Length: 282
Image (cartoon, rainbow, N blue to C red; front, side, top):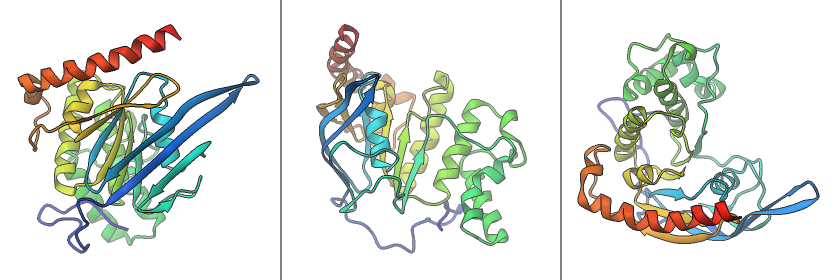
């Protein structure tokens, strides 16, 4: 098992560098349908895209367009009805987890009976990591998330943003090289969400995981990502892709004050708004 960086070292120093153009996630003609009350509902239809090593991609679209469904198929939690998904060139198999892939859910899913440090270290316990090594890794993760002083607190004593940091570090402590995130900050207030953007950007700038981030928040997608994949209203199809070339590192607050941000927001918002309207009309 792997673990977050100690303050003076990189967590991937023992790994050979990966090519910047290496395809990590390859989705081809993906489809998903569900049966409900005797009807077949097409949730996702003929979606194709690729995500490369170290790329941060946001999957954006109106509610009900299949964003989370696509993520769950990539995460092997749902079978596809058609098409294919490859991770590092190998087909995914439903309910068979893929090594080096981490998933951060919409809800923090923390164990209420475990402290912050025990929640973060849970996967290391399952892997049989020795206690002394586990404590050091958890200590580094707590510091990295800005949770120093809260190691012995229980989830009920934490704010929503702090709970989400714990959930994030519980995933990152096993050092996934691919990170799937399903609207992890959607339930947070604006101020806390911006703070979580700062935390995530700092970690990603250092570790450069390959990230697929599901969101319905255009501002969030612009702040975090290198590329936005915009889905249509249901059935979800790939409508457009947008390259986000704002310089990095990014400040989640000051970025939104830039004219270039406003211009790109307006352009994408127009296309997204068309899908909102279609969804209301259906």
